[in-house]
Image (tube, rainbow, N blue to C red; front, side, top):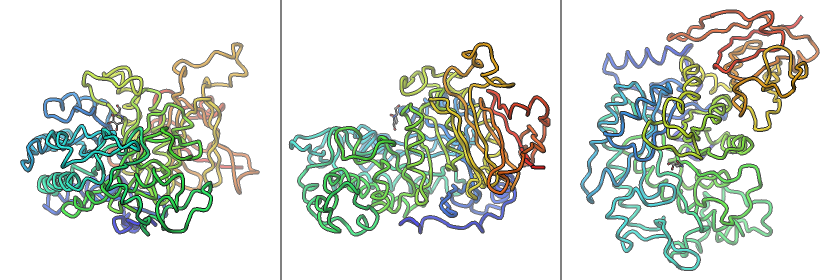
Length: 565
Ligand code: DGJ
């Protein structure tokens, strides 16, 4: 159980819900009787998590707007994209420079407009506090901070030169950023406590620094020579490659060649944790931090100018938990294109003590398939970045276009998940969900769920297989790059809800069913209606099951019942 367990509710018994519509009804009833709406919170069940919204599990099918769309005049192009993608949540920045342009004078008019428009659009908000660090830079701090290095000192490099980053040891910086953040949270409480439109807050954005392993300023140096705090020692084990690491002592004595980067992670986490604590004391919303990730496949060797040090990369999640117990989640921003890296980071960030959440992912079309893997793994939510019709695209990180063609690959999947957004989160909290995305190599994959195992293959026509085809390079249209993915909810011993696209599935017995022949008793294609009831559209049989279950390019939902004879 993680350090910040007091912030989490471990309570399956809270889940008295039997279907998705209970949450909506409860919220409507609460609104009518002017009862307070349940606060958003993160709950845990045996290492699986759910974000509770209006008192019920919620799957955040989100998008993130571009960085400079945080102004009333820019919002129209955001809402149209949100609508086309069928998102239920918008992540968008609130910048320190914008709410406190003059020291001590706060202006939250943008927040008021944003929250009011979110309600009109029936969308929840996750607000991103861009303060002292945004992608490591201080660019969203107000001018009065950025132009006063005496009061707001920068990190020093190893060579003693001033760097571009604010130092996490700037006491005035922490005081000023915290004061603004607390003013923001106080304002949110005032305008939103009765509605709960805002469901989470991100504190800073992709923090840390490039080109340096840590801050070498005099204050940082003094802290670096102090003993490693007990809370960190208790959480962060010494990597096995460190010879003679002491059980306690200074950072160098304990962590050897990892000392610099671990110390920077601690320094950033301490600063962020202190802000989160102050913010939650006035208005208690779930809070998280996001990382510019490091290699998730190679072993975490000491920093060699090869990643953004100081952020919540997978190898320092423990340090963030120890130093920032008021932060609920360390989360990964996924932009690396290799499927091995994506899957590697998902595996590293999904821990019994860290809920899986993907607050940013590239909006390039071939990233859409990861939604199935991410939600199948049981993530509380996901948000492709730059889903916003502003005249800007972040290609080659993301999509080339900023119009409906960008929205479509994500929108069609969200549309299929939306009717299940509550049920999926409940199944996920119960540990019933699984998922996969087509790998770059297009290789077959297998998932075992109870007494059934499901094989998945890609780039197949619907009947037979490529071996039967005269032209072995004759692949189905739309499979030029990987687009396949599938997620399962194992809803009963022999029953599954399957949602996916561009994949062929073969169910077979496993465990005590391993030696028995399998048969599809029922393969209903359909959807859930607004009240959470399954609506069958047709039953697949004959050709539609003889070569396996072929999920087309259109995201398709099946209710499958398996049997043996
Ligand atoms: C990750 C950052 O967190 C985002 O704000 C944005 O800058 C993207 N990178 C790049 O578009």
